[in-house]
Length: 274
Image 1: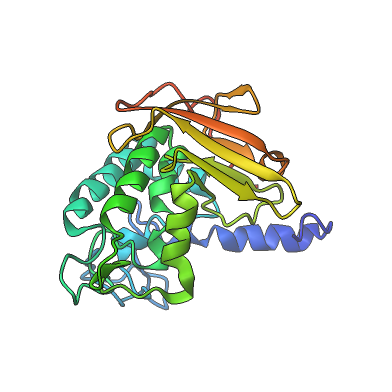
Image 2 (image 1 turned 90 degrees about the vertical axis):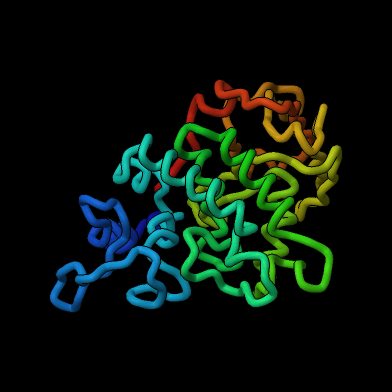
């Protein structure tokens, strides 16, 4: 906003503040590591310990909470290390229903490596779009939707989770359409990232009185990977579009398959810090 208003001094100051996470990223562990008031990393550091330097979470979870600059975080951790670490986090957390577990008192999961029931974690499965492996975003967002959410009294939004602010339900709705933005549309020119659409067809009435139709071909519980995509008849090479293009309306079509197409969606990564 400051940049758009021509207030460059404010813009530079705020961008500097937005990169404060770099001061807390430990150079060896590549984890966000709290510091003392004197500016030294705290001792006896436990990456799974909640509350010590974090609000409702821990270092493993909060290390990925840089939605304003995913590319900067990926570069700081190293792309290969980033992808391996994040993919393994989901592989392990799948056994715990992507939260604190499968018991009625599983609320929070603040000591877990991933907790879909809390705000700092909800964008993380979409970060693979920025790290060159969009098929992993397709895989994990679809599996989170299948496993974390339910319809019975205990397993509605996770097991004993707290649907505060409507965030868990909203994530499911937008993710099941195969759409998301890790930055909450706060860029000067916002973007929309693509995932794995759940429905064969969905029609969205846009705020400008136009309509966006999202269709999938060969979709099924097993066919969770995007093979190709097109928007209004034009083939899409990337796993994202600018929002101002998408809200013109029309038809967004995904062709799905049961194996990742590792060449689709990787040509140009989504813009990061703008």
